[in-house]
Length: 407
Image (tube, rainbow, N blue to C red):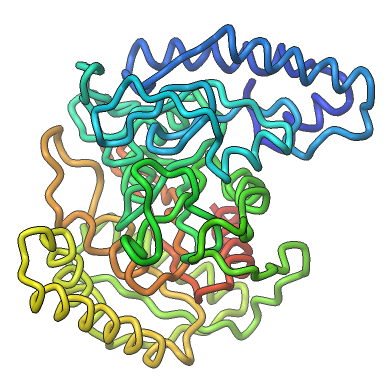
């Protein structure tokens, strides 16, 4: 079914379509997309159909008690547990079939959403021997690691879904595939049920976040999955003012470009003009954001081969980077950056330098969103990243909506 989450939810809630019709229609689209892109890790059509029928029975008995996502089909990256679906993570354990949902998945299901498939990260991974393809340009890389999720949404096979992001693994594929990808404030969404397990002590960067075709779809999922669960010690019980109006007048932003393509820089300046046009104020940013962020992250990726002293130094530098950012950004509410230096490159291993604009927000715990920003002359998606203050996800989403509505 085409359209937004809100539009489809309304059609289901008014009885125009059943949950089964909506789910099976989307599932058929996803099968077609998978045939072309290999985006899906696991299907279980019978399980999905039974769940949709259960929701229709619930609707028939108590139509006024359905959840906000009743009958909405969603997909989930295959590093996040979905009960009764296989979940191998990056371990190769393809016989693993969890009995319990990840917290974020359980919250989606409690709200009425139906998980219609698990999407393939990176790829190919045994027993999946087919590489995930870009949704529109077969010779281009779709990005990673939430690869199949971004591809499925961009190609119309999925309406909205969940990925995970350690240094850009939601935002980079969202950028190259032309969809919206969101990394929440660190701790806003519990990572309970991510496989392999992540935590604030072992990997304080990795967050579960939504991808979708528009900001509102992403925001609707985020509001459902956010909040402490009592299991993830890195997710504090912080309430977010999701439904309060946000005044953007006087909000201060800075542009962080540097070594991006000319098309991307043009897109950045367009966003900056939109922000000033709605009353926001532009200021300068001089902190060593990009080079230091990439250096600290590269050393983090290499930590298994480091001495104890080297690991200690990396953690010290990370903490210093985070402190310096909070100090330098004290008078700034928003950073506007490229999501990636340019459009999707030709297929092949991803140069880690492609993450240089996304890793800083992961190190500082800041919320960040990748927004589609038009296309280049070859029709490849461009993307702009907005980085907000930690625990101001509601403001970041309001700004992202304003940018999106301006076109």
